[in-house]
Image (cartoon, rainbow, N blue to C red; front, side, top):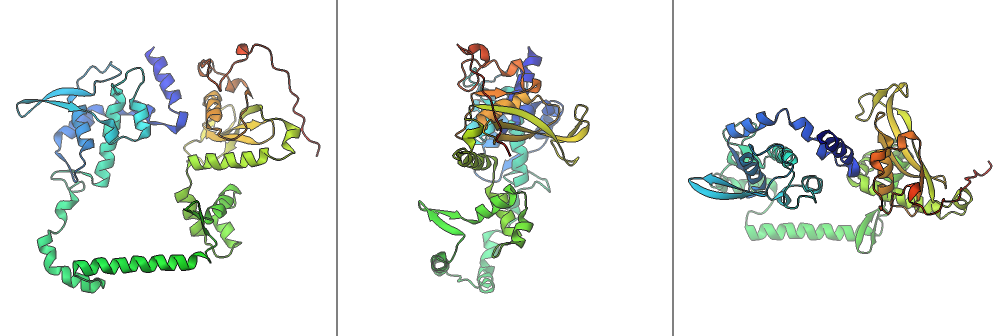
Length: 390
């Protein structure tokens, strides 16, 4: 049962792009070393935020708890300075949505997953050490940076000279008025240039950059920012790259894909091919660079690369696409293709080969989006998907 539970957890980790549940297997080996390290050094918070340090104290207090237990109580009684003190873990104070989903189990309300909690706390501790929010007392690289700053008594005598060099008033009220004037001037310049700024428009009181359309064209058409900038005036490759790097994420890409699918489905010609109630899922091996995290060599494909897994509607448009490793069962991502498809085309019959059928993935009877043929009262009539003549 333990092996089956671990396998199920590894499969479930891929849903919603949440890899955190599989981190625990890499934590087992250095666990004792990590606990020995935090007990050998003195940690301090560089700000008033102490949520991670309090969570670390809670984890250390439960270090010797029964490791076979799946969950752990949210409070523990410890002795501090000769008195009994209750320590509590507040996951909401520092953990993100994916960690919260990993730590909480509806079968054990109020009891976070013990193994994942330790990984969560140590990973946040590492992030806090890198950012400087937590420091190691007496260290060099991880010292408290605030203690290295000059005291105000040392700076006060040099503040006037600094303001002269920076070109700002040294009087507090005059300094506030100076920056208010600069902000008002900037606001006037933006308002005056709005009419001539074809890249910026207001929709419902929210600013919208037209440059995002150019960015979508550059990457969606596989041209790249450099090639698009060469053939367009008034925009550089750096601007296209910056817009694509800062304003694009998987969620927005799914929504943009849904908009394209919905626009395509509105065309009359799509009704010639099918009504969208049937789709097919399959993967095709694509050559990639060897240093790609998804790439691998597989005997079945006789090459090095990854699988481009797609769910294609009978109206001949891809509803979902994702790169997956060559050795994984496609059935796992078949379910993702149904859950991540937010377009108006929602098929109720999916065709797949043997890679798309795994019994463990199709035990969700009663799910509104997952149905086996045995649950139908009457067999559905066969449809013919006729391709238009070219």
